[in-house]
Length: 176
Image (cartoon, rainbow, N blue to C red; front, side):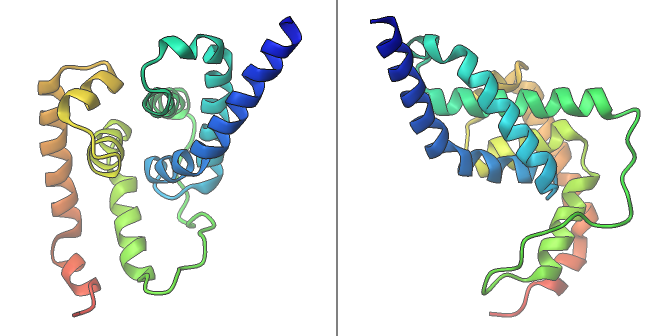
């Protein structure tokens, strides 16, 4: 009897992980400013942490949102742990081939501007508020901060992005 529950639990988690891995990876790529290798590591860590709590997942109202919160916390932990020892290189990481209609110059400009934001600003502005389309309150819950802190960080981060991209963004966007 125990074996069938474990097998069922494993199969349920496998289905969840298969269904969410792509979304988590895209969010992780945004968090890491396009570092696909680090994004893969973050997703792997997130899924392994999710597996350890999966037996209690019935008490989690929204496993997908919980996984997203785990991803964000894993990213922030990684940035705190390695912020003092690692330095960015001038060489861009491997990037996927652009799809039809994508503008590589625009993509690189946006990724560079994101790379220059502090990690918590990337979490708030890019991933949680705009990629995930979460409310201020949901973002605050995921980051364990107040709603006022999310609003303040959002305003400051968007201002920084506008300053960094300035007129160069309009130059990169092809007239439609």
